[in-house]
Length: 73
Figure: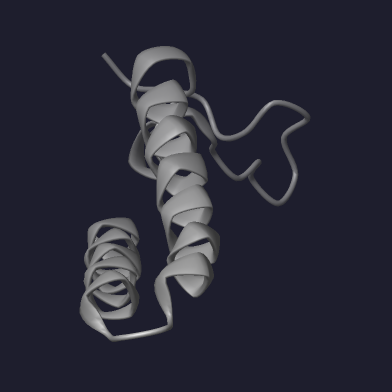
């Protein structure tokens, strides 16, 4: 969610710099950053586990058990 906000701000900056007189060359920086954030977001969605999935895979071991408390059926 925060990535989409950052992406929106970068695109808005690129549009503002493009429309301002004499600031056209400065529009390249937010465009490049926005493309980089977009590629990173797509790669995370396509290949990497989300933070929620990674948290669900972990568990804390019990106090006296090597692999955690025994599970009851």
